[in-house]
Length: 409
Image (cartoon, helix red, strand yellow):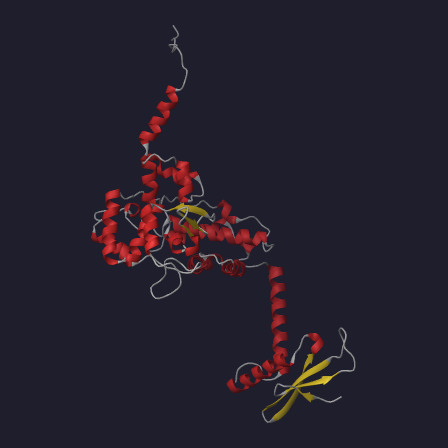
C-alpha cells in the first residue's frame, strides 16, 4: 500500500495491514522535503506510537526553519542523532555525579527550581547570595567535602568586605542569611536523597545580630506624619494608616485583595504572611472609613496596585521617606535601629497596644509573630502593668502572720 497525502503539506501516511497496538488499522506517518537540492523522505513513526500528522507537520516546519537560519538540525536523522547524543551525555553526567558525588552548585540549582515552583518570594535574594558569596567558596565542592571551615570562610569573606555597617563588614544578619541558605540546601538534599551526610552548618556558629528596631512613634508623631503624607500621596497615606492602625507589614498591605475585606466583622484576612500562618487583622473605624471611600475592584484584585498597572505594589513609595525627612523624624539619629522607616508603623502599633495594657499573648496574635519571644521586646513599655500584676498577686495571698527569721547565736 503506497503513501497518501494528508491535509498537511509535505506530510504523508500509509495504512498498515493490522494495528500494532489496540484495535483498528494502524498507519505510518512520513515527511518529504528538499535540502541542498536533494529530495528527502523520512519516516516519523506510527500513529499507534503517539505520532500524528499535525505533529509531523510541526516537525517539518522546524527543520525548514533551521535550514533557513542555518542553525539546528536540518534533517530528521540529524535531529534524532542530536537527541540521542544529548541523552547519552545526560546519562554519562548522571553516572559521573553518582560516582563522584553531587556538587553544592548542582544541588543548589535543583533547590532553586523548587523554590521558584513553590513561588517562594526569597528565591532571587538567595540566588544573589549564592552567586556573590557561597558559590566562590563551596560551589565546586562535592557535598560530602563541604566542611565547617569552608562555611567559616564564607563568613570571613562577608565580614571583610569593604561595606561597613558596624560589625566590620556586611551585617551579621545578612551573613546569618547566607548560612541559612546553605543549611536549607543541605536539608533539601537530605529530604530528597541527594545527600546522606551530616549538615555541616550545624557546627558553625552564627554571628550575633540584634537588629530589632526599637523606635516607635508617639500618637502625636504618627498624626504629624500622616498629615504630611496626605498632602503628597493618597496611596502612601492609606498604606501608612493601615500599618499604624492594624500592625501590617508592607508585604501584607500590598497582598490585600478586595475579597479579604469583611466590612460586617471589620476584619482583614492576611494570607501567606511572613510566618506562613494566615491570620485575621482588625480594622479601626478610620481604616474602615478609608476602605469604604475607595472604589472597590473585583474580588481577586489587589486593593493597592502599582500606578497604571493591575499588579500588586512592589515597593514602598518614595513619598513615605520624603515625609519622614520633611518633618525631621530622623534628624541627629545615627543608630539605624532608631531611625524611622515604614516598618516603624507596625512597631508603633504593637508598642501602643502594650502601653495601653494589652497583654503580650494578645499582641502576639495581632502581630502574627511566630513566637512569644518576638513580642517580648515590647514588655519594657508596660512597667506599671507588670508592677500591678505583682501587687495584685500579693494582695490575693493569704500570708497570715509573718514569722521573723531567727539568726543563729
